[in-house]
Amino acid sequence: MAIQRVLVVDDESSLRSALFRALNKKYQVITACNVAEAIELSKIDLNLDLALIDLKLPDGDGIELMSHLQKYHPNIKSIILTGHGTVEKAVEATHKGASHFITKPFNLEEVLSISDNLISQKKLEIENCQLKASLQNKYKFDNIIGQGEKISQVLKLVDKVATTDSTVLITGESGTGKELIARALHFNSHRSQAPFVPINCGAIPSELLESELFGHVKGAFTNAVNNRAGRFELAEGGTIFFDEIGDMSPHLQVKLLRVLQDRKFEPIGSTKTKTANVRIIAATNLDLENAVKKGKFREDLFYRLNVIPVTLPSLRERKTDMPILFQYFMENFNRKNSTEIKGISPEALNILTHYTWPGNVRELENLVERLSIIKGSGIIDTYDLPPKYKSQSNFSFNSDKIEIPDTGLDYNSAVNAYENQLILKALEKTGWNRNQAAILLKINRTTLVEKIKKKGLKQKEI
Image (cartoon, rainbow, N blue to C red; front, top):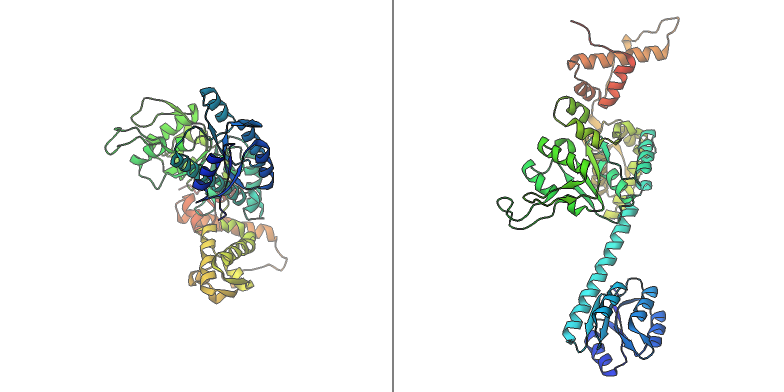
């Protein structure tokens, strides 16, 4: 890491020398005795981290010099030194960007300590900006892999709503990338510079979740030894992401509904109301509409959350994306693990394409990581795949029972009739439980319901 650069500007040579000796033990220090010399040095040196500037200089004002330096060095920290300290000047210096205003005579150790803190603060600010820039780049919509029709429709929708403050409800099976979409919505919004705060409603016990969300004050309950900010407060100005929102208890659903309606909440044990300037994004792998019908999820909360519904397709519905997803993960893990996987054979890719992927994209990512480590180099072939991917039974039928009359048949009508039989068989086997039937047929429940409705399939009356 480069050594930090410090500029000392003071017309007293003894003071300049003292500051030079103290600071030069840790930093590269350059000095100037007036405004003109300081400006020339600032134009030459493009990496100034800190400036210690006397308020009264022979050819100008220290605060004006500080403002000039900020044009060439936007992230520079400044300390104003003066033997004529006034409240008005201190306020003016602070308003114009000074980090500290120190009155002479001063303790040299104190100045050194303040300088160390400011340089550390600047490093953290730069690292934070770099991290945010990295996250924004990572979660660009262009980086969400997929070219199939369904995922393309999802990306078009989230691109439209990212710049709004509308509440979004993301649904889809586990491993389809719900949090990835939530983060993309945040980092492509006007709230991107503020925090993105996720919370998994299914991973935290109900009795602790309220404190996690709203915070608490000291003494609110046993072990509440200090005030604690909740996730809503931590997410101020940004986005709070409720993962597995369907697992939230009815008690907390009422409290969340109030925040959605009024944008206000109270920490546990407090009578002070706080505002919640946050965008809310929720996700679930459950059928919330069905949960509402069963009384397990509040209807009013569901409609508050479901302003912009986004449904992510399973990997089974994205078979055309399998080659590019595999390639994307392969290249990532080659870089990460210093491996040299060149690709995958058509036979192995065919096996993966016809696998049902209960863990969706997350499962595929884990598989590619495992293969890259174990194989190390070369082409992934069928013998490299774990047994379960090769042994998964595919549906088969007896071709001898298929009869095609001499006069021929209508192919589409025959396929449609056969599909009707498959759906009805699955429904009858599960007592017309659509969830279980969809699992048997290895399709989405919503897809099955649409087919039943479109085909007009009905349960036989007993």
